[in-house]
Image (cartoon, rainbow, N blue to C red; front, top):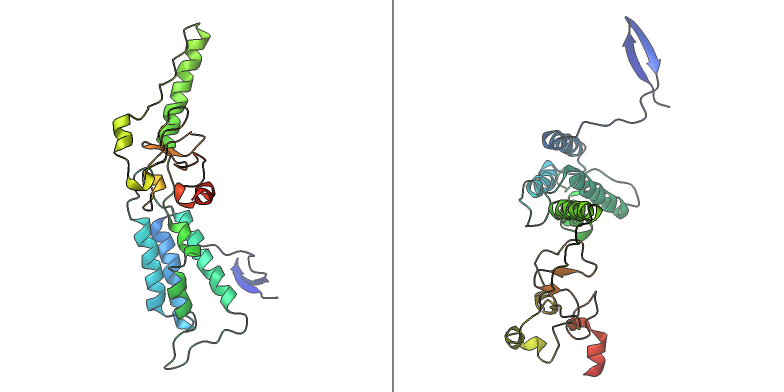
Length: 241
């Protein structure tokens, strides 16, 4: 078992090392220093080059400083750490035998895999901006509080908002790909056209809706009006053709 020599009160003492060594990584610069120290260590033992490690570090920091799309939160340090752990987890699966350090004129054994894994979906999925519903949630909470106070005082309940119905003029302007399909549900709600096209819908989703929807309408199939799929993959539509 390894031991550590410590100096206490001018006396050398032999003791067991601490079980866990954890570096401070609570800020961007601290995390960058941690990653760079590891990169230098890997370069010194010729398992991975500094150039390769620096590409991965720069990728993480670039993602961290990239402004997120509308309706999404910024990438957090926790996401960077999860992505880094996933990269090394996948790398570990590729080495079942001994890991041999590079010799003169040969490439470090980790470089090829790291350069590929840094673009792997299993890793990059942790670097995607997450939807942010904080503003909408606060607004809903305040509205519910107003309604509760009004009910307690005997005031009439607020009338529910009327559902927007598409006009016949709008129906006539829908894309050719949706010709013959009813893009208004039985209860008068719009079906999102973009969701049923090959390009898909890029609009932000409305928070608190039981069925996924955006400002343009429900994200349901334009053919059968069921959720979780579009008319492009609708089995009912395929059977009818």
